[in-house]
Length: 93
Image (tube, rainbow, N blue to C red; front, side):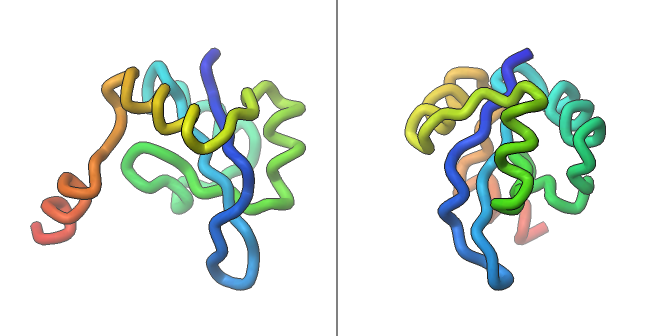
């Protein structure tokens, strides 16, 4: 399994958030998230936004902790990365 998580450093809704990704498949990511109580509404095209309080639990469940640069590098290399342009185009539909 290649589930990755970065540091919770993104503020929103009064808390900090991390990103949870797979460098293999979104199916793998959804299975891991569901098994660990992360709601589907947290999925944002190529990653889940996960609250700071779930961070240690997800690492204990097998997510590999990496810094943000490594997470993005591996997501791009996997071909799963959704670019900002692709996000904007999707939002215009």
